[in-house]
Image 1 (cartoon, rainbow, N blue to C red):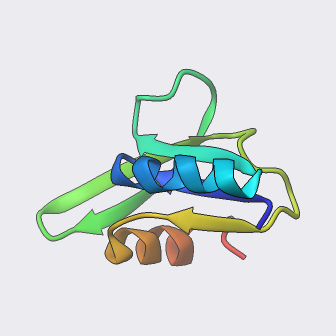
Image 2 (spheres, rainbow, N blue to C red):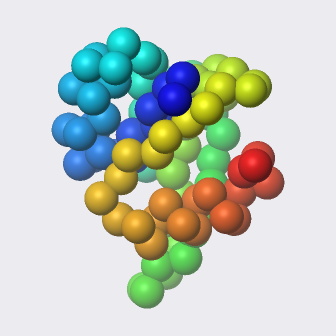
Length: 87
């Protein structure tokens, strides 16, 4: 992969050392409103409502191969298959 995308917050614990070990970049995916610059957002359904995660718009470049690090397969599936930017 060219970059890891780590989903808050347990994904950070796995993603940061793995990205460092692989010598690749790390893109942080956080709850809505937590990142300081312009972001892209994806909303997904929960058993009890809806949630949104965001990533900086410039965190991933076109054509990069991304591995997503997360501890909740349900969230990963929703974000990747529900996103208009998913390949």
